[in-house]
Image (cartoon, rainbow, N blue to C red):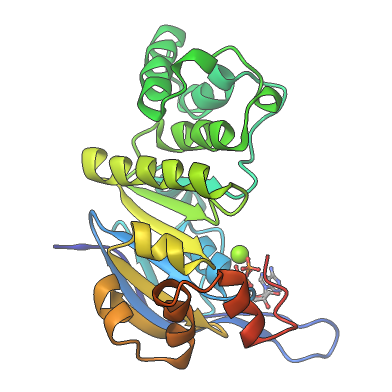
Length: 269
Ligand SMILES: Nc1ncnc2c1ncn2[C@@H]1O[C@H](COP(=O)(O)OP(=O)(O)OP(=O)(O)O)[C@@H](O)[C@H]1O
Ligand SMILES: [Mg+2]
């Protein structure tokens, strides 16, 4: 299998305020994501997960090291090459990021309109997408009239509209209740299995990794402290942080408990 995402010795540092030292958000990270897999990136608040995602879609460039995504070297790519790369990557968010002034049809059709599709083709594709995500009856509604789970289905339909090869999900189920979370995870699995889309799911909940991911990357303070096949990482955690996460699933601890055990100031969402 070939890698669709590879990081080699990647560091991303941001300038600190005034004369404070720079802030290293991602620290010497190397990783490879195989085509067709579902990879979970787990860590507490501030671990560098979202920065990692922004390096994958080229919204940030590495301070050092190399990021290669779908054959594009993100650090040296031109702005137009990065735009083309972003067209091959879908993205979903915790807060859905829908256009409230547009209908569901308008939201899902938006990337197709931007890509220059004809109206009739957009309508046909949007119908197909809404059926796929299970909200075929909501096309003419506005997002404010939908439940959280329905909104995320709109976000997912929009993200896969242009048939991306990679889907990045940054805390995509964190605003949803457990039942709705399970439904959205089932939809993500179907997108992976039926459409062959590689998925990178960012989360602070180990149960999401347990239910969804083939592989897991554990981040702490910008570094990867553990990684591998999910079953291996669960069976033989290599880092103390992984052990704490895994205990939440194997001992049935509420995940909030494990979060509090670690650090009262972590302030995780
Ligand atoms: N543009 C930026 N400028 C300065 N510092 C930043 C910037 N983006 C992120 N950081 C810092 O980098 C660190 C990692 O942030 P990041 O958002 O990647 O963490 P995260 O793991 O996604 O956290 P959360 O779970 O809270 O979303 C944090 O200390 C954050 O303040
Ligand atoms: Mg984040």
